[in-house]
Image (cartoon, rainbow, N blue to C red; front, top):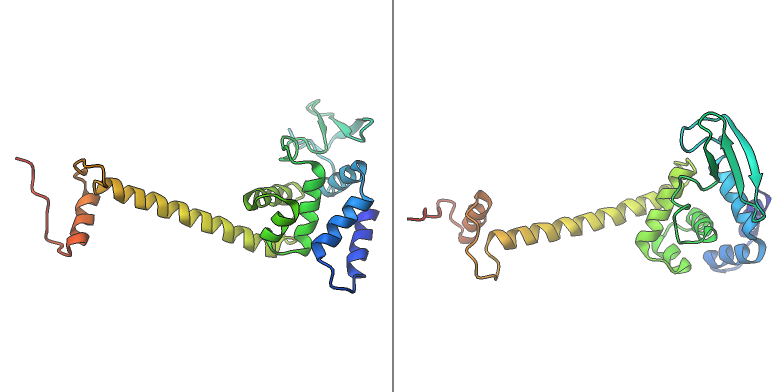
Length: 208
């Protein structure tokens, strides 16, 4: 991956205060063709050897290369034909391959997910999904340690908000809300009512 090595050298030789994200994206825009992006995907995904995404066999032969530089492989065990992005989030994504690759390399130099989202004009949740997908696809664990902390933080915040909304809505229904309807006579309702009145001995009288 000579061009990726050139990118790393370019960044290490940077001595001014240029924005790191701008430097990375500028390099990609000037130096990378569609063939280069496909080459990076190929090198990253198959760095431990090409295997069939359907049966996981390593008994693979290259079948052809299209005019667009897309490689096709044939699994000699299950006879499946696949490409470098088959069975990955990239294959069904509407986001272009170059954006996926740019996102991946931005994540290695920038530990702010929001920063990456702003640079690529994507929302934060999309960046989280893309990085998780590529981390699994490229079989890497340690390369995104700082990013993973941020991802977990974002996911935790989303989950906490979801749980808070669900719990609030649940209490709203149990206590009758502002619907004018009689609240459900449940153990949770009686518990909430007891808390509300500050008296644990208060019990709802049975209907006569």
